[in-house]
Amino acid sequence: MLTTLQTTYTDTRAADLAWALGRDRLPALAVLNLELNGAKLELRLLGASHQVLLEEGEVVCSETVACMPGSSTPLPLGVAKRMSGWEYEFAARVETLSQGSFAGRAQELLALVADHPNGLAGTFPGSPHAFTAMLAQRHEGQVRWRTWHAYPQEGQLVATRTRVGVRAGAPAGALQPVAP
Image (cartoon, rainbow, N blue to C red; front, top):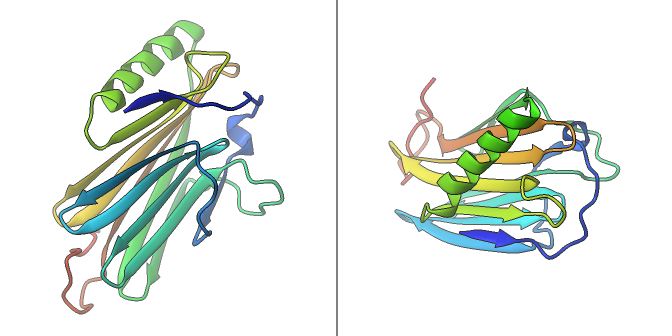
């Protein structure tokens, strides 16, 4: 699903992004509710990037990657956490592209996500290449999602990937162990 976000474009930068796990639901400009083989997933586009809410049985996970004033946790390159019988893995990278390469990559990603039944993308007013896009899937018992945050004024694209699964040796549940 592709939407134009109804908000004032603010000149944020890739370096302004912060990461948080466990934040409460934030106001969203667009939401896609999914059910992936029993896992309830909510993809949320915020005025300042994204939030994903996952619920399956005892697993409850809230991931926020956004420009959060006062946040002391910058966007990490990687995070691995074990919590209450489940594992969470997050990775991020920042690509700097030339203007021509950036426009082509932006169009490619928007087309991929807009036509996917588990995808949500929103473009910001002012630039067709300023967007946040999210794509979720269930693979080998894990719930996974990828996101892209585009900053055309800098030629930067922030890509993240997340996977959540039950910890090896934990009680059996619908989510499976996260592969090493």
